[in-house]
Length: 124
Image 1 (cartoon, rainbow, N blue to C red):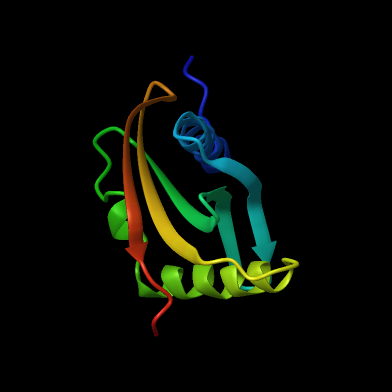
Image 2: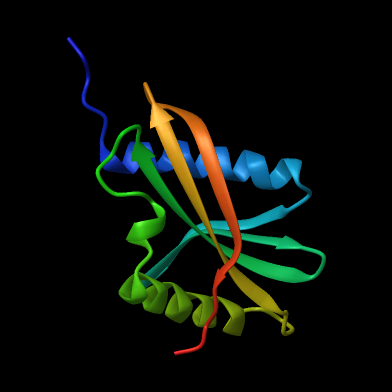
């Protein structure tokens, strides 16, 4: 009998794949699942003095909607709010950007990863 996997577990598989990708590309992982009331950031990383807020969207192969489509205006607003709070907690200011990673799973393994650098900005 096939075990049903939770959406949280699927998300974790995708986030783990993105963390490996980032580390291979010389990013330092600063935080994961940074949460405030009204917003969450999946991965906070840093490279070359830039703080990178990464939204990870994980989908099973042949899903009806893509991960990219799920990062709509409301989702971006919540990410930006959380990022502002995160940056306020740092000792000094850093430039930042917002990236999006879309992960496709097959048999609960990441088989495809699309990474979008500077996918959106904090303009309202």
